[in-house]
Image (cartoon, rainbow, N blue to C red; front, side, top):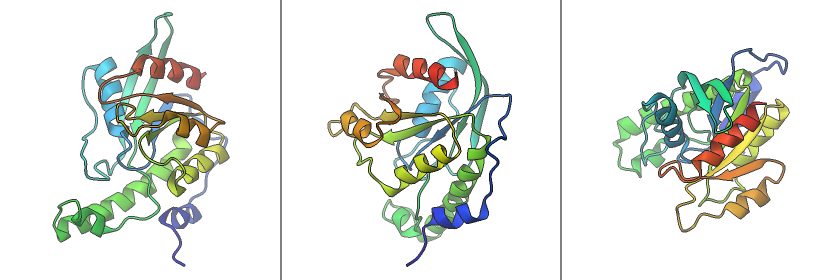
Length: 212
């Protein structure tokens, strides 16, 4: 049986659970097409007035680590939180260039994208050790009980990194916020639509709690 991409990578990595930085890094993690980059753009637009990541219906549009420094978050109570936002490539246990061909890419381009996406997964996992807090962005219309989701959260728990789960795309008819809450009852879950800004204020309040 072929070992998953995640397992192969983890064997090569070592981490120090005590290596925390004084500067806060907030990472956006999750499977491909969950809406990480859409959320990154929403945060960046709200507080910096500019977008930070490209988005696409094709999986693995984000294949490199993207960082926005000095985002200064403010709430109605006057609290402020300054952090670096890190948008990471989508985590996958298997990446096959044929999935990109099915999305309309030519073979050469598909193979290139698959190679870049694989490197992106490796980089995402390496960067876990630099994260102070992580927002796991899941598609609220997809089954949360996936190998990828469970593996991501398991590795975050092993590193003792504070986690907030965002159930994105609650504007979709198939969205099921309760299912995600039931799947991961040990974590705070907030339902949002990053695309339309629905419930974004509650999300920001949860970020303050996450960083405490």
